[in-house]
Image 1 (cartoon, each protein chain N blue to C red):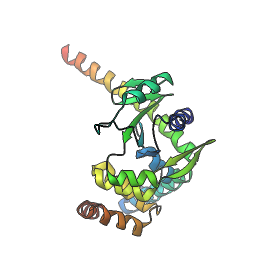
Image 2: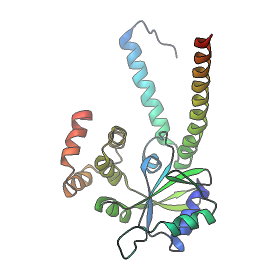
Image 3: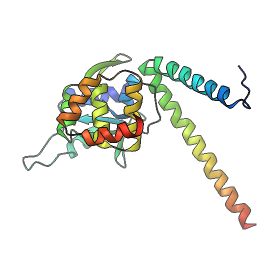
Image 4: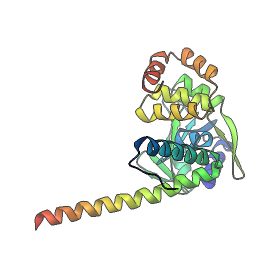
Length: 168
Length: 65
């Protein structure tokens, strides 16, 4: 995965993508035990056309130049299927901005913090997301007060109640 | 360590302890080690998929006879 991350850092340094951060299961694996995942989720600020639409063509072209192979919704980069997702909600935008730089081998990459991973998982709301929240909370890596502030700020109280009714 | 599975409570306690120990060990790995384990899961899952598909083909063949 080191080579995959190096490509992403290159894309950022040359301005093809803006700020990015690792999310999803790979980010969670920084804080808790690894679980099976098929891909590497990357949240990023992407180019937006004056019309407001996302401009993905230059990104995909550059990824191909750097050895990426487009396969369904992923780009396979050095063996890792990568999904580059735009920062699609204010919560994800804030999570991206607050991402913490972590070291993977000699590469330093931003990773979504555990608090934000929980909040994003609440927002997504699938069964596996609730499991991830539970694992992060059980491992004691989440600042619960900070998470509760995010829950309130992004109106996730109902999802939180659902989580508590399942796991609380 | 062996456990008497006829004694349900003891067996359950053993499983809970074993799972907790495994989890603690898994959490103590470095990020690099955890990512390597995810990559190994791909190999395992591909092999399981291959076996499942092979079994399915064999079952269909057996029904056809």
